[in-house]
Length: 345
Ligand code: ATP
Ligand code: FE
Ligand code: MG
Image (tube, rainbow, N blue to C red; front, side, top):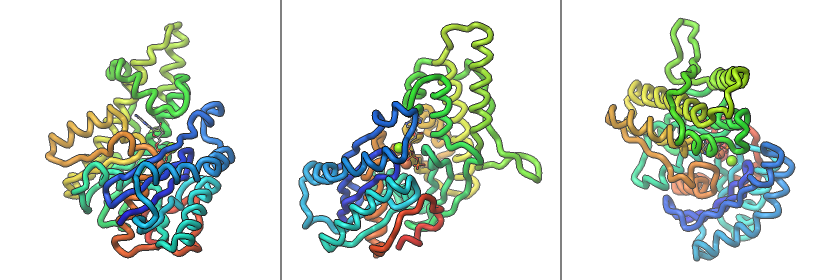
């Protein structure tokens, strides 16, 4: 199906037109410069920015795609999870357009968007597959049985991977968002310069959880390292080496868990999604490990790792093709488990 999709769950006002797994247009109006002065996303400011930008983004999406309303078969918007006020802007716009144009409306779970971003780079991909979802708010291993049918096999017990990148970047004074900044510095650094602890989740029965992760200890270890270097009068701080060591530890941790999970469950394909899927260290480690174990690994193209509306349109098209549409009474939800997405249809 050809879908107009809107994504406003956080700090990107995004609109796309997608024909099944093909992107006809993808507009992303980032609010990052607006929020940077506060060091993070301010919800009230985000909502206001979405309101100011959305109409123009929709017009641009049509212009770039060279399509008109006659070709649109469904209108989609992210409805959960995310900032309530921000979600409401995109959802209201989509529902209004669905009424005016008399087209089906599809509410989309933001994480389903991240999962299906891989379809845009690998249109032949079909479930079942394993998704390593690594974003600013989530770090999970999700078994994708079919569209709308998910099983969570692993997750972080504290910080999300992207959150860890952002927090470490803040303590290294690299600004917001931190992931891309660390990735860039890490390319110039030695990943073996500082041994850092890979967070592990203990099991009551002894040993460690094979798929769950923990990043708050690693973040504290980086803080201690910085304090120690400062006390020793090391100047300037070897930020390249610190960034490289941190990134390598996260990448190895995620790779180990994803590979173990795929092998244990006999799943031969791993699709990665979320902003951290853009990370060069993760891409390198996971690609190499997958080759060793004869697994297929798929990464979205860089522009579809972080928030965008093309991935939302792709997820919506999958649902529409299965006859899943949402009622116009659908509201936004700040939280909704990925295992409960069929509540939206
Ligand atoms: P969620 O999807 O969980 O609701 P979100 O939408 O805020 O959270 P995304 O847009 O998927 O998250 O990703 C943003 C996160 O990805 C940020 O934490 C950012 O630092 C991180 N990120 C982006 N690029 C990179 C990179 N190259 N390396 C590491 N992290 C990155
Ligand atoms: Fe996201
Ligand atoms: Mg974002």
